[in-house]
Length: 261
Image (cartoon, rainbow, N blue to C red; front, side, top):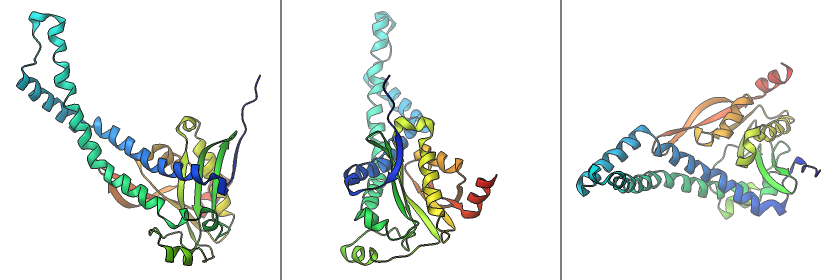
């Protein structure tokens, strides 16, 4: 019987860069698919779809005709499916700009200019990869540098200056957190998160760890809650349904109390 591949968490290496960048972008764009799917089945969206379909059927005179038996009912199907296309297009058109803008913002942040150099500026920072066999299935990045609360986009001048700054912030920020969907049913995110939290709190300078999260990434949000992160300030509302994006934070005292309980 063949042995199962071993899973391990290790530090990022430059050879991971291509796949890591892909996974970072994927982590942001999967929220768009979730937002669209939830909007498609919202009661208001369904009501608009049914209303448009009824008007279209009336205009085309495609209501069922019992004289043709079953075939008389089938002519109603195009009238109900055709209006769904513009409804779905409208939902995606309203949702997509924010998520595409957010992907561009994340990919232009200073940490992605040089991942290894950026996360080496503080001993409490780290970029870790979850590997299953020879396959990358997850990642987590904690920024505990002096720029941990800075989300500005990078310019050549600022990147050169900031990459020289050494030190540790009292508040660390989880910049990136992702696990492949096929492994989420076993809560693989918890292993990554717990490893990252323990590594970061090993530095006594750090008093809390925070991350932006929303219901659009349910697996990540649930993992934060399971591991003691509490909901903080709202950062923004996104999408056609106004999803809340909030800060979630774990203090050192809460983490230590949970460890000893």
